[in-house]
Amino acid sequence: MVLSAKGQVLQNIAVQTGIYEMTISAPEIAKSAIPGQFVMVRPIYRSFEPFLNRPFGISNINAVKGTINILYIIVGKGTDLMRELREGDDVFLIGPVGNGFTIKPEQKNIALVAGGMGIAPLLPLAKTLREKGVTTYGLMGASKAAALVGTDAWQENGVQVQIATDDGSVGQRGFVTALLEDLLNKEKIDFIYCCGPTPMMACTVEIAEKHGVPIEVSLEKRMGCGIGVCMGCICKLKEADGSVKQYRVCYDGPVFRGEEVVFDD
Amino acid sequence: MTKTAVNIAGIAMKNPVCTASGTFGYGDEFGKFYDISRLGGIMVKGVSAEPWLGNKGVRIAETASGMLNSVGLQNPGVDYFLEHYLPKLRKKDLAVIVNMVGHSVEEYAAAVEKLDGHEGIAGLEVNISCPNLKAGGLAYGTDPKMAAEVTTEVRKRTKLPVIMKLSPNVTSIAEIARAVEAAGADGVSLINTLLGMAIDVKTRRPILGNVVGGLSGPVIKPVALRMVWQVHQAVQIPIIGRGGIVTASDAIEFMLVGATGVAIGCGNFINPMTAVEVVDGIKEWLDKEGVTDINEIIGGLRIG
Image (cartoon, rainbow over all chains, first blue to last red; front, side, top):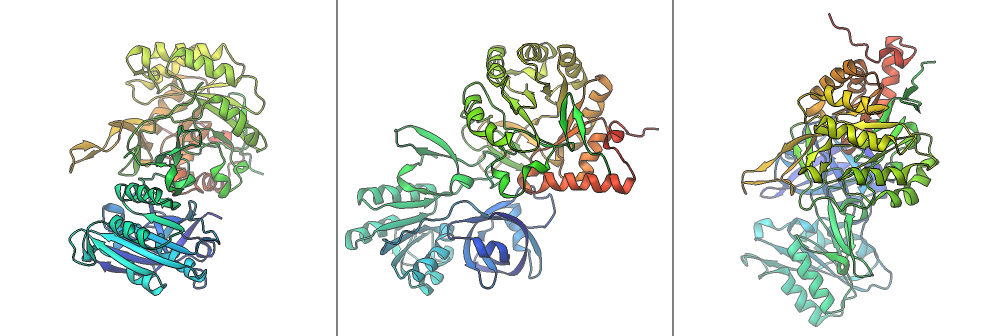
């Protein structure tokens, strides 16, 4: 059930330079959200400025406490206002929106591949996978150590974490996709979940296909509404007959089967 | 009991609140938030005789109190609409106004011929802000002769009420309104989006893939109110007013300057409950003001 609701900020803290984590009390959303879904956030409840809501992948779902978390990086007007929010402030939320990841019982060995802030939707997924008792490898790529988020939460959920950074300041120097190549050469992986920058996801899908491992990706696009009506966040998918059709990232996704996505922008 | 029903060019609506084309899909998505039968009407996303893919690149840019879009009227086409969406909408208790688009008079004619005669369509809204490809991309709605020509061609192909959706990108919107009225339009709907741009100084490029796009949201409300007021004085046919409506007060303002109906546009994006909140808010205002029939406030602006 998708809701538009008032949420209350419980905590809003910097987790890295310029990267924040907000814990929001939103019991109805927390009750129904599944990993891979997102929320549209308006930092000032009932204000029309900034005008559009911002989409954020849900980075933690706590149905018992009735809370959700989001991770955000300061990029502009909206996130700048979000940073200013304090405990007790109200935010406007629409959620949970979009389709989450699909989890199949036959999956025993899973790889999560994240790039930067793309780790957000893969955090609650790790928690769910742990409850199912599967072996999970978490491969994280970031520009540098100071841009790394979420790997602690992965570890807490029993994920076997490997890190790659562009400058080698932590983990292996290079791209996260190199870690995936190594992992797929060593281990039998049943399924891959991926979220990150578009070129990184395109490369991850290519590697997954080469190794014959099914993959789901969570796409990110500039969104107007987040609820399927503005046609702002269009992506292209390959159809079974070879044709290419346009879909809405917010409504038909954001999670899609990797092999069907056309990564052309 | 306060009367909230209005009749717009033969389209009966239990309240004056519609959702504007391109902001509400074909009704499916909002069913998750509320029963769309609470609305007076839906103006469905614009349909063309054949499917349109829309524009490439970035389609949305935020502005102060509003947004720009260059979606480019992506739509699955009339046939798909009739087969997949109209049957569902027919079961709802609201006026289904089908917005239609075209790149040539022939395309408009083809669309109306396909739409005419289907049960469950209360009226047509004709978007004439599309570029006329034969006239070098000049929008139909910016020239009184071209606007009248589309009106005539649509008019003679259907008995349904024909509402022409006017472009604000003109010197005199009253002149265009008079032209479409003379050509047989049953009503007008205004305003469509204002042509605008957004620039990224880092890259020195336009943000929108299409370079220019349509501005909407509360930012355009003062312009829209002025235009509805001018058109109300220029023509006899009813008006559906719109442009930045996000509250009941906004809607009432449009009715006071002469709109019989109102439409909620990108207000649907920022709060999915906007349209029903406006429906409820109008009722509350009427009761508070002691107005027993909403029709009494149409054009009721007090000047002097």
